[in-house]
Amino acid sequence: MTAHDIRFADHASHADGATRRNPLIPLPDQGSLGELLSLLGQPDDPAPAASADLPLSVWRLAQDGVLLREGSAGQTLYVVRSGSLKCQKTLEDGYEQVLALALAGDLLGFESLHGARRPCSAIALEDCTVYALPTTELRDLAQRAPALDAALRAGLSRQLARATDTTEIMAAVSSDARLARFLLRLSTRMADVGRSPRRLRLRLGRRDIASLLGVAHETVSRSFSTLADAGLLRVDNREVELLDLDALRARARITRGLHVDALPAAARASGPAARSSWWSALDTPAAA
Amino acid sequence: MTAHDIRFADHASHADGATRRNPLIPLPDQGSLGELLSLLGQPDDPAPAASADLPLSVWRLAQDGVLLREGSAGQTLYVVRSGSLKCQKTLEDGYEQVLALALAGDLLGFESLHGARRPCSAIALEDCTVYALPTTELRDLAQRAPALDAALRAGLSRQLARATDTTEIMAAVSSDARLARFLLRLSTRMADVGRSPRRLRLRLGRRDIASLLGVAHETVSRSFSTLADAGLLRVDNREVELLDLDALRARARITRGLHVDALPAAARASGPAARSSWWSALDTPAAA
DNA sequence: CGCGGAGTTGAAGCGTTTCAAACGGGGTGG
DNA sequence: CCACCCCGTTTGAAACGCTTCAACTCCGCG
Image (cartoon, each protein chain N blue to C red):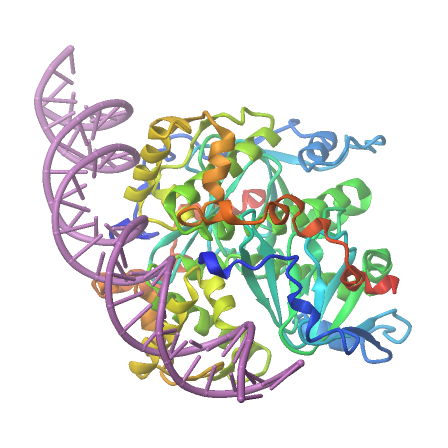
């Protein structure tokens, strides 16, 4: 975001933590179809099929390791099994924009399966394990395990729906609201993965968070202080404890000043989904 | 973005232009597998298969018609054949965030095929035609036309890669740069669809553009004026002519002031893709 | 003809960006 | 083992640019 936040990709920043240990090593006999399906949110398939002979390979990625490299012609689809990664892209002006956070169950790398180059990088924020599904095996895999095929499709849908998260965060005008939205989203996602929704261990630095929020990193620092002073959370460097989720949600709604309070309550409560209208038929033309 | 930009979904704004004529009507015998494939960017399939008996239905959507309704349980995948739509989502605070522009060849509605509700709406900015592929027919279709299956997969990849466009636009700090990025992206996409990359007919109002850029609509107006005064473009309401693409690209790179000029040229020219490094092996673990 | 929406432009307030400095932790090397 | 340095983080202060409120024009439409 800011001029001095610009870090070039050539910058040899990754030569420190990963040259020692091999950043990506195989974990034989660690994966199972059942686990993969549950990761993808499949409601416990009753018939787990012949998972034994399926070539499901699990890899271990060390912190700071690069799973996806922007611009490469990778042909492997990954499913995060544990840990977390950040997806980022180097923009034309050299700024590295953080696009998303990938947690367990997230699909990575689908964008370049059809021949295109990887549009963004994925870097491990901690030690991770991932399922690797090469395109070459994908078709065969889908045929032998239809449940996996369906689960991947569903995961893809989720991924596509989640792609707008960053935009929604940056739609808020005040940086406090943006930070609140980010923390709340992270909170619910952590809960989904089975971790605490209140005690967050941010694996992202202030700069990366700033990139996600679309503000300067100093502003992120200030917003943390503001929310902490207001008693909404407790912050100790990258350890964050959310103290008042409701108040946080209120902050997240605020665009500027307190206009939201003036909104008719019905509009907020019911939302667009609850509307009944002849228009709804439009979304299902096949049924007409 | 701004407080008075808030338009509630309940707001009966769509009751004006579309009650007269039926907003969504079938166009029998208008689609062909070949056309659909070329729309999806498939390089002219040599064996067009038996396209005649494939149930490819084309629909016509009138301007302001709602193709996708946020919150509904639509189970149809659409491929835009002609025209343009806007995708938008009503945020918790009632603000309608425009997320993307859909042009010919774009896939719409995949996000809710696995049972979820539609995460965003899609509204026609002009009269459109779309291919409708209901989930019920999708599997059969894919089996009978493997080329279509591959094309849809590729289209999905593109869609996923394109999902970050809005974020990249909003990554710029200055509103001029944001507008320049938006116009340039639109320009190249129009060129892809076979339309003029210089003469743009914006089907989006200032408010919607402002939403996409993440600024107030007055700011969009001012940025148009600024770029026009600089001679980079000519603007007449929603008609825009890009006069100096290179200068526009320079604007799009600028974050604030002129720091970019100070960047080492190599970093801009080569980019992340041109790097050679032992790290590249990481993106293809299966080959290791 | 008048109303309402869209777009433009002006002026003021204010929040963010920017530049700067200081603090703290973690690592390295003396 | 301690000094040192680097880097991430925090906080301060000033300036810029955006948001906001407001007025005005243009245009389509009832």
